Image 1 (tube, rainbow, N blue to C red):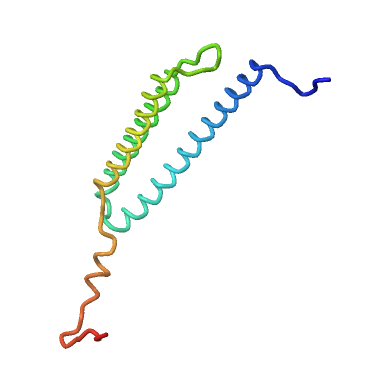
Image 2: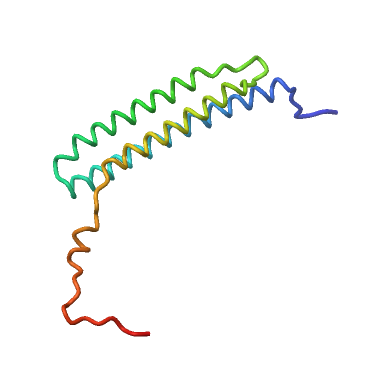
Length: 135
């Protein structure tokens, strides 16, 4: 009378396959996002600062590639038991490493901060006799 039932082992196998597919999808999305961010940064930086920023962008992209390689190597380091379980210590170290990589990536981009509105702000000058309205 039981139809469409699966054993615990089959469910674990299905979950591990789904996790692998999701992890691969997330990696692809992260790479697409980083490529788009690099394009945006290149366009903005070339517009604002000229050719000096190109060298900085190359450094940023190489750092991002290194962090992506570290993430991939840390994924390979995870050891899954026969029951499909990951030890808590490994999971904690993996999560901490991922968070540190994300934080390191964001701190690198803040070093190349440019002021995009400086020119417009400088153009907004008040006239000599200006009096603000009273409420």
